[in-house]
Amino acid sequence: EPEVTQTPSHQVTQMGQEVILRCVPISNHLYFYWYRQILGQKVEFLVSFYNNEISEKSEIFDDQFSVERPDGSNFTLKIRSTKLEDSAMYFCASSAESSYNSPLHFGNGTRLTVT
Amino acid sequence: QQQVKQSPQSLIVQKGGISIINCAYENTAFDYFPWYQQFPGKGPALLIAIRPDVSEKKEGRFTISFNKSAKQFSLHIMDSQPGDSATYFCAAEETSGSRLTFGEGTQLTVNP
Image 1 (cartoon, each protein chain N blue to C red):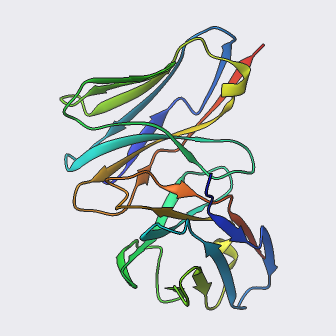
Image 2: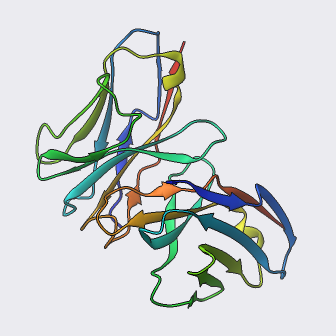
């Protein structure tokens, strides 16, 4: 069964550094998402992306965050200057249609630790 | 108003028992309600979902009950098995949106 793959599985960075989290969505999916989960808390929406532009973003997704689909297969999340509170599990997801009409397929996440 | 409240936070059930997890919402624009199952070290995976045109949906041992007037929905797991031990998240979405709003999660443990 096709999967969403995320790399790296664990990223440790120092406060103020830039990080790029990478995702390869399922190949025929058109909608892409980033969610995050702070340890022991609920899964929170960050951003959705369709047709090479952001469809929707949450209040968490401020100017420090950006997303890009640099080629036909990768989908990246960049955090420009990491803060301690950015430490979380970041999940990439994709869907064939909008999340309202088709299920989200999540990757196994990248655990980001900011020290 | 965008929140989805989930309870209980944790639940322990004996094998063969019924697990019941409840969620409530305020936003009347929500009209899609999925449940996700998450095992340790994995991303959430869709388990079952319902739209408000029906009051109940059943898939195997999993049933969603939906009460539109009370703005509540619940997941029932019949004949619970140790392999069902996981964290369960309810979620909700508006027709016009592209974001899922998740509940806080319920950690289910099914004892053998």
